[in-house]
Image (tube, rainbow, N blue to C red; front, side):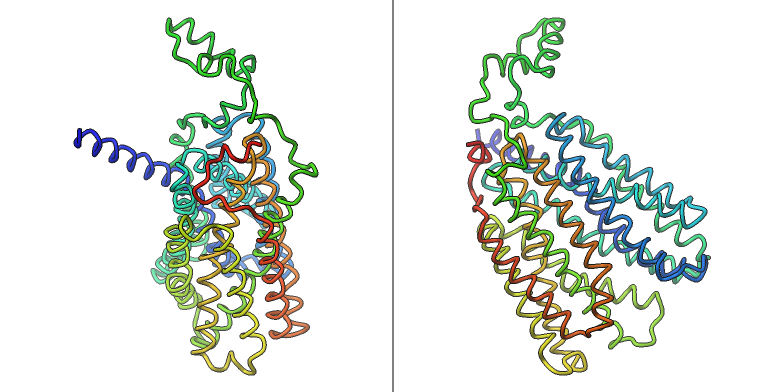
Length: 449
């Protein structure tokens, strides 16, 4: 008996690890791509004589496409099922990465970046919902955030690979193509596994006994000569608590404001970490080249970002999603206020790094991870992927706005004004968080009412 229990537990662990790898490689690619495009544009600027406007458009293109990808894939995952859509996003990522590596002009690379961004955006709702609906109530937060934590690995591998290629003195014409093309490997590695997943039982329960999926199952079962089928499981099943919902209705407006709004504000506020990391690099290594700056960036990620991802996955089911997100926003706001208000803080590198480190840690041990998790839990099955995709899309809009407008404001008004403004966005994010229900230890069925 004990042996059977141990074997069952081992099989379950193996299943969870396989799920984390299958879903997580998309986020590894997302983080890897997010980093290497900065290195690539730094290399291409002198090679292709790119203007400041072209660089800004190149860096922002994938963000805009990701917003569209997140919304459309979320909608389609609710319409056609998780299984039918899962894997298509990494296929798009794969072709986008290959196209990027083979780009022959600014326009061709820009189009490839749009394709990559579209695939990255599509991965948010599909992976989040697939993992959320496949997990147990007691460890759902842990597993979903373990998948999202694959971003941390991408944030480390990206700069290390870039440094490795740069120090090897490989021609820069080859380096940038390799950096972009290698992003196709993690996407391709999980395509087959994603296509082989089972349809979510939650999604199946939204189907009535006369929907196409059940009719097909009934015919196949008859030809195969057995009765154990989806048709049997769902025969006579009424939607009941699994009834249809409309995403953009008054009933869900409050939750959409909370999930999409907090994600939007987070992605704007996250710009503060980017500004701070650049200042740290300039203070520590003012005359460093691209390789040293890249290595220092990897060190910053390793020291501050990675622990945040790990601790969030480990403690989210114990602390609670809403509390973790609220604490994260509050600490980030305090850190940004400190950086903005304390005179000449950036000249005192030790306290500056401490405040920056805390803000970066609590970004990940807080809203960066919880804004991904919460929309995969609090909405009913028939709109779950759509709601997640919409929330992610609005978040990407926030990132796009932050990337394009905040550098202009920084140049015009200075560091103090920007950091205070970002602190205010975190305070608003903390307030919006209070609109969210707590899902720790609760089943997804409870959202169907």
